[in-house]
Structure formats: C-alpha cells, structure tokens
Length: 394
Image (cartoon, rainbow, N blue to C red; front, side):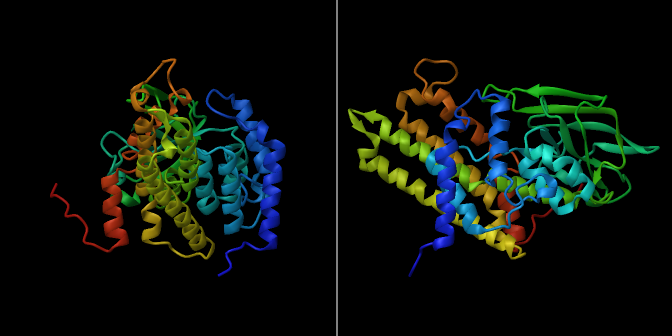
C-alpha cells in the first residue's frame, strides 16, 4: 500500500513549509497580542491561501477549489510549527459559511470580506433566559413599523457582545405561527439605539458572556437572512457550523503538541514526565483520540465536497471535540502537579496560566453551544433513529 501523497501534494507541502520558514517569525504568539498584529497575520494568510482558502475572491477570500489533502497539509505544517492558523470566531466560523450557504449576493459582498479580515466582530443572539436547550421557544419579538422591525426582548450567554460590532439574532416575527415557523434571522449593528449589554463574570473570572436587552431596537426589514419566518432553517445552518468550530480537530492537535512539549519540560523526582511509562501511556491514549478527530474531520470534509449528508458523523463533532479539549487541559493540570491548582496572578504559573483557564473554560463549552446531554439526545434521535423523548403535557 502506497500512502505517499504524490509529487503534486509534496510540492504543495514544500510551498507551505517555505511560507512558514519565511513568515513564521511574524506570527502572533501567546496572549496580549494587539488587534493590528492579529489582523496583519490574518491578511497575510488570506493572501497566500492559508485562511479563507475556499471563499470566492469576489467575497474577499483566496478563491481556491476545495481539496482535502491540501487542507490537511496546511493544518499539519502549521501545527508542527506551533503557528496560529488565523482567526476563528463567531463571524468567521459561523456567520460567513451561513451567508455563503443561504445569504444573498449583496449580503455576501457587504459582510464576508470585512469579517474574514477581522475588521468586523460578531456575536450570536440565540439563547434566552427561558429558551436555552429549547431554542425554538424564544420570545424576543420583532413587530413591523413601516419599513423596519422594532425588536424587544432579551438574550443571554451572548459571547463577545461587550465588544462585538454586529449581531446575528433570532427573533419571533410571526406570533401566530407554530414555534419553528415564526422565527426570522436578522443581522444588525450592536450600536443600534436601544441595545444594553450587561457582562456576566464566569468561573474563569472573566466576562466571556453577556446579557443583552433590546428595547424598541429599530432594524430595517431588509436585514434578514433567508426568508421571513424561516429563520429556524438558517439558524440550524449556523448551529452546524458552530458545532464544527467548537469541535475543530486542529485546535485539539495544537493543544496536544503543547502537551508533548509540557511532558518534555516538566519533571517529577528529577525525571521528565516523557520518560515515565505511566505518563507516556496517558499521553498516547489522548493522541489516539486526537488523531481520530483529525481523520473524522477529513471524513466530514469528504462528505461536504461530495454533497452528501454526513448523518451521525456530523452530529458527534461538538460532543467529542469539547470533551476531548477539556481532557487535554485536565492532563496538563495533572502534569503541573501543585502548580496546576494555581489560578490568577502568581510568579509560578506556567504558560501564563492558560492551562488552568482552558480547563475551566472548556468545562463551560461542554454546556455551551448545546449541552452534552442535549447533544446525546440529538445523536440518538436524529442519528440513530431512536424514539424522541416524550414531551410533558403543558
């Protein structure tokens, strides 16, 4: 069996490595990087086709044809070099593919280019205090007022709302329609009068999430993605991309490489962790799961390129990816020993305390974006065809 990629792909691998050798020193590293540095790196990656690779040039991307092996070669090279693979956020990873799939040409031309360059940041207005797991029961309403909608209601757990420029938001535009048929998907500026953002401090000690209140927020009726009242279909397209972002195998690969470095540096009783068969065994078990996620990602990409529905394969990504990331961080906490329990400011912190923060934040992501329990229900019902959970009489 010949597993070689062949001359064409080996030439492409050499091209990627040459880029890394020439520009790797320019990449943002660690925390505290300026927004200008992040945007500069993102622009350089787009220019050479290592970010926004398959987004059409008309919308600001590189315009390459999708290619599974090229995607894998890029990821492998950047992970091996310890370099960031460009920006990943709600706008780039969730809204942009939704617009490519269901937006108008005008919406794509207006929003995709500045979003992928990091000039516009987005937040997601989905969850509400009374509609988290049952998202279709959302109560934020939009009533017609001339050519505009007037939006009133509340969202919660809104990541990045405190600094976002724009929001993609689910609102109820048809109060007389069944739950799933009266929702619309609107995009509008977070600077619109009537929007109040209240940060929520999480167990990480930071404010990743927010409450957002809407009071007579005026939004033109033209700022709708998809058809009016059919926002549930658009929302599910975005949720599909959200699950892919949260379960990104490249993120797990990058984190695993950092674990390998940690095991080579940390010692117990004068012995490197990497020289201990116990620690190597634990590391190998995690490596197997990381590789499984990487190959699963290729499987999903193959299905997408063929226009096939991946079925259950697409449903397990978020559940498995978030749990794996948390277990990778947990390994690091154990490996750090007594230093692993430090949190906040301390001269003894390793890697600026990122492992501790990841451990706490990733635990939250097992809940965020659809709890593990909800994900298992989705896998069981939609993927395995098991009976739906009985609904309690109201």
